[in-house]
Amino acid sequence: MLKIKKLKKYFGGVHAVDDCSFEIEEGRITALIGPNGSGKTTIFNLISGIIKGDEGKIFLDKKNITNLNPDKISNLGLSRVFQQAHLFDNLSIEDNLSIAINNEDIKFIKNLLGLNFDGKEKNKRIKDVLGMIGINKSPKHICGELSYGQKRLVELARAILNPHKLLILDEPVAGVNPKLRDKIKAILKDLKKQGETIFLIEHDMNFTFTVADYVIVMDAGKVIAEGTPKQIKNNKLVLEAYLGE
Amino acid sequence: MLSAYIIHLLILIGIYLILALSLQLAMGYSGLLNLGHIAFYAIGAYISAILAINGFPFFGCIIFAGIGAMIFGFLLSIPTNKLKGDYLALATLGFTFVVYAVTLNWTSLTRGPLGIPGIPKPTLLGIDFSSNLSFLILTAIIALITFLVIWQITRSPFGKALQATRDDELAAQVLGKNTFKLKSYSLAISAFFAGVAGSLYASYITFIDPSSFTLLQIIPILSIVIIGGLASLRGTIIATFIIILLPEPLRFIGFPSSIVGPARQIIYALILIAILIYKPKGFFGKVKLE
Image 1 (cartoon, rainbow over the protein chains, first blue to last red):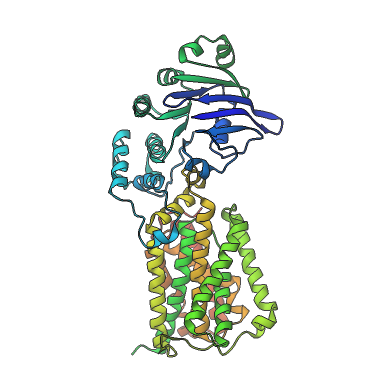
Image 2 (cartoon, rainbow over the protein chains, first blue to last red):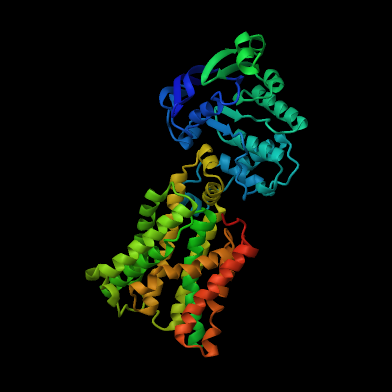
């Protein structure tokens, strides 16, 4: 589904991503772990086109997406959740979700003539996803007034609704309470059952090892190990680099 | 029968309503702090005036005024697309100075400081709008059309995408929105209506010169948008009436006109400061001014 080939990104003298190569297989949950500053979020920013790489290639479903703009990459099938919630704070929950579904909003004349309002099918999808994340707020509620945990849930719902082939989540349970963490874990497992391919960054090892099928470990911009959670747990190199043991 | 004075005020309210609603689209709904709105107003007024004195029918003048301003709006959006907040305000402010300098110095086209006199009053579909009452009706119709178009834009998915771009451009991009296009369209549409307002102004006053389009002219329009509240069309309409009518009593106190003019600006500035301190969202605003 996603192939990273000899990817490099330098910030001055800092080798944030240094000759990284790995693949994400379809239909499974892959976790990217590593100590702070190991280059995980930089990899996500390169994949989603927020920053441009210095060298290397990125393929999404066999299409070369290297250095394309974020909107183009999104339209080729990538959906992302950020480390800090990036909601449209002055819009309602419903509007935040509707924006993700509607891909004809740039067609000005169609919109001016009122031919692009969300139909019953789209409204049903919004309702279904709201049901899945189980948010106990009215869809008309303004997002800026939601709590941190609720914002993360709405952002996850929005990423799910954004048409995609690959869902990438940057620390989906960072800063959330244990109850919500379990809820997000259940949502991700449910999505996997539906055939979703998910790539996530996470620091919570319990969460990572119970939810992921495959784990990639980075340190100082390089991939130092990859394998099943069981293999990674017993990898000496990982323990040294990541846990300092 | 409405007195000539009240008709004059209502025509001004209509023109300012078109200007403020269109600025609201760019500023309140798209987050573009555009101080170049007066430049589009000037472009519309000059295109309309030049065409009208060369015998063009009013319909052609007003449409070309809008399209001309729209093209400049689109062109301005290209170099300024990545600018935000104060930086965009400065760049658009610069555009106002450029347009002002052009109207002042391109004398073969604009007659410079002498201005363009004798702009004919409009005739549309065989109807003569030369009386002030009929011109008021024309202004009211165009203001209503402006409101309906902008209202439809803001409630459509296109408008929601504009608001999403205003709130978080990166998140909008990651959801597949081409924010470059969205912002350019918004500025171009906003400029179109400013150009239309300029055409109405030129036809109404029948004389334009560069002094009608200085930077100071942006203050009442900006005050309307901020006092009414960002992203509120209802607030914009109410604030237009308040801002245009509020300084009018000064005329009846007996102050000389040399005092009334500056006093107007002082009143606007005081209201603006008070609003920014005590009600940063304006009276009906949904978005806080950043």
